[in-house]
Length: 453
Image (tube, one colour):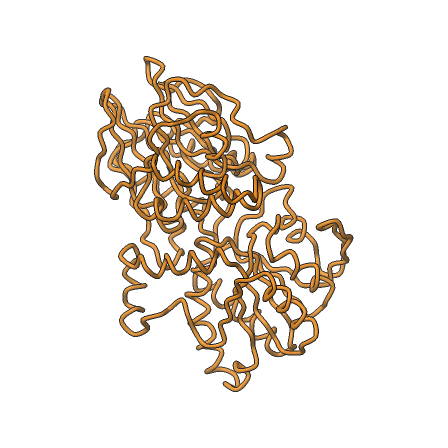
């Protein structure tokens, strides 16, 4: 067998891996969109590899850097089954409809036709159950703990087992179940996004966010949280519910009545409803919360903004108002979406805080803002030159990605050492650091396109 990486191996976007068997049959794992610097290296998003012999597409989860090129794949002639978990099957039409409308076409008939075709190809699968694909090949989806529906995928072919990690979740991630290592992996294709970092603990991140929000309330400022519509927004709502209750105990409760908590993302609102409707996939802690709070993703002062007119009115209102506000808006890397308008309006204010709770890829506006010290630099953002006076914060503990210790734990809990670990989905420093750690533990680690030994 051999693996060819069509994306997601030299960076953290565009994940697309092709597992070839001896007779030139193959499976495709993910088909994601390139973003930031990865996108600028490419002339187009069109599929640039042959589709002959691909039996199926397997999806680890529905983040756009893992599914965003599916419209181009189907336009290129792909008409094979698409296997994914049950929640992913529910989420993928919503995610791709939004992605097509923003980045490919606004023609409703074209989008409708694509989605109808897509649904005919999707095969929802239960976690933990083997699916026979024929020709001596079977697959199984296991909990990855990254976002709702995320999975690592086991591919068993003639007795040899290859595992694709997809994106593994952090042990600090609320709501979802933690990943459990596979019982076996002859070959492991492992993400390395945070292969060089250790996340702060969940208690620390909650304390830090609480401190930022207390300051926002005290100085009548605005806290802007660029958040991915799926996963991060729901986790933030879940924990904001607790944080605001705690702030209410510590401060004058009447202050909380004056703060607006805004979720400005039609997509996030839809996805939060799906999260709420699929509570059977939540973890034990979340179930305990449900026993006393039937709606942990909804609370007082929460304003959900759907229409474009309401969005524009909200920005104008906050500019004029002296009331404090917390704004959660997409996109997570500030590459577009409604968060752009809030950042343009408030980055120049000293009582603004921008809180990053997710990975900011090289070349994205989010990365530029993240690296900008308050009041000490200007950035070119959305065709504007902005002097940044806002304070910026990075809460790594909110990352939905496993950190170095999580990744090593995932590997070490596989009963028998894999013959080879192939690192993907990471920048060079992260891969190098993780490879060094794993090699020191006696594992064979590579990150190149080559046959599996």
